[in-house]
Each structure stands twice: as C-alpha cells, then as structure tokens.
Image (cartoon, rainbow, N blue to C red; front, side, top):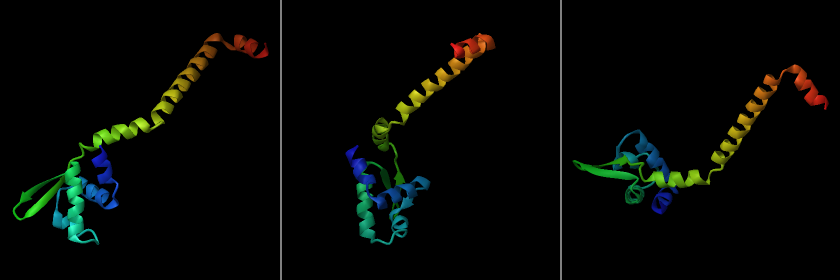
Length: 120
C-alpha cells in the first residue's frame, strides 16, 4: 500500500494513470504529452510499474503500458475507513426511520388524541 501511495503522490504519475485508464499507450505516446524529458517519463513509468499500477509489454520496438488498478484496492479500503460519511449516513438513516415511525403513530392515534397530547 505504501508503494502505491508514493506512486500516486506525484501529479505527473496521476496524469499518466488517467491517460492509461482510457487506453494502453506506448512510452513514446505518453512522453509526447508532457513538457518533461523522456528519461523523466521513464522514471515515472518505472515507479508506476514497481508499484504494480501499470503493466508493460514489448510490442515490436515499443513498450506498451496498461493500467492495473488492482493495487489501489487496499488504499481505497483504508481511505474509506477514515471517512466519517458512513457513520453519519447510519445516524441519518436512523433519524429518518424514527421520524417516519413517529408520524405513523400520530396518524394512527387520530386528531382528538393528538390534540390532548399537545394540551397536556
């Protein structure tokens, strides 16, 4: 997980992953889309390859890179565990259930009983 986090920490590598999400690309195709040197792109691709986020294969004289998102799963699970959204969703769902239950009980009691409840 640490290697994956390091790999995606760099904006150039994130952009490469986004490009590879669309389609496999050669190292040359990737390099021409950046204003940095080909050796720099090669280093970025090596980091991505070592983290497992990209796979490469030789096709003739070219090296074709493909995205492999599987190594992101442990990082995504860890990030999801940090999120408080799930906890709040459970609380809000419980509140919604209670509101509907209370409304249903009031409707079933009838108007006279409901007036007595508010005047007491």
